[in-house]
Each structure stands twice: as C-alpha cells, then as structure tokens.
Image 1 (tube, each protein chain N blue to C red):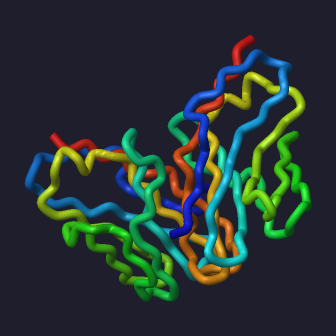
Image 2: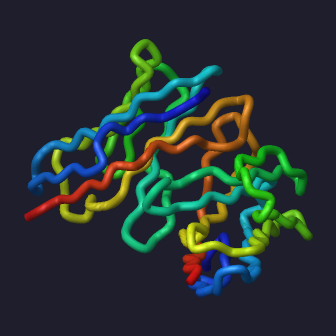
Amino acid sequence: GDSVTQTEGLVTLTEGLPVMLNCTYQSTYSPFLFWYVQHLNEAPKLLLKSFTDNKRPEHQGFHATLHKSSSSFHLQKSSAQLSDSALYYCALGNYNQGKLIFGQGTKLSIKP
Amino acid sequence: DPKIIQKPKYLVAVTGSEKILICEQYLGHNAMYWYRQSAKKPLEFMFSYSYQKLMDNQTASSRFQPQSSKKNHLDLQITALKPDDSATYFCASSRGQGAGSDYTFGSGTRLLVI
C-alpha cells in the first residue's frame, strides 16, 4: 500500500547550520508530495508541495525536490533559525484519493 | 478569524462515556477530514467526506461515527470512550478531494479519557 517514511524522529542542529529532513514514499499512482509544519500546540500548516518531477518549490527558505526515480522528497534549508524548531510531516496524496498519508514526523530542534 | 472551528479545545471524559467533537469550516471547501494525533501514531487518517458523503473510513472501531448535518460541518461522535482514545483530534478541509488538494487544519480538540 501507499506509505511515507521519515527516518529521523528527532533532528537537533545549531542555528545557522543547514537542515535536511528525509522523506521517501511508496505510491501506487502518480504522487503529490507535501511538507507540513506543526509548531508546539498549533495546527499543522502547509509548508510546500510538489506534483512535478525534479521541480523545486520553495517557501520560507525551505525547499524540496520531488525525485520520482528515487521516490524521495527531502526538505532542505541552507541555514537553520531558532524559529524553525517544530514538527515536520511529509505527506503523500494522489488523484485517486482525497486523503493524505502522513509520515511519522520529524521533530526539528534548533539550538543557539 | 479562524477558518476552521473545532470545539471544544480541551475535553476530559470518563471511560465509557460518549462525546461529540465539533468541526465547522468557513472556507467554502467541499471535502472534510478527521485525523488523530497521539504519541503512538502521529497524524493518523480517520475519515474523509466529500459533499457530505463518506468517501473513506480507516477507523477500525464503530465507536467513531462522523456526522455531517451541513456541507461545512463534520462532527465526530465517539461512544464508549477508552483511555486509549486520548489524543488530539484534528479536523481538516480541502477545496476538492484528490488532485493534490492541500489541507487546512483546525486547531484540534485535545481529548483526555480517564
């Protein structure tokens, strides 16, 4: 079945260092990939999304490239900020179903 | 103003009781969803509705029953509550179903069953 894998449960970084959060997926149909960010005690919010192979959407300094050949959609940022500390979810959708399938989530903790 | 209203924000219930979680969206969206978030299973899909019709149900237990009285309402009735039901329940909506529609989430209802 369709699934999303986020291998890191917790990533701790020092402010200013680059961020990379991993996301791989398995999809029966042509996939749509999303990154959602959830700050403490808040609702998840859309960070960015991609439907097109090898395109790199960007938002708030974050970017991710959908690579269908490797079934990956890793989230990156060149320089972490303290305010980036949050829970990040990778999610998978497709034309055939409305629901999004979420990965386990990666907690990103940025230290000064 | 919040575009998706979930009530109550916090809820404490006794084991065996019944509760209804309220969700209303004012985005003009046609699809609505319920997700559950707990320490064991973050953001677990429960139900999806499109134009007030149930489209998908991934909840094994019949104790969880969605109710859609209006197009922009999708409430969640939970009967015979158990401590394992303790979680944050998020309602979400999207313009359409499928085709990569992105979600808007409500702020959640935190349920504690004692």
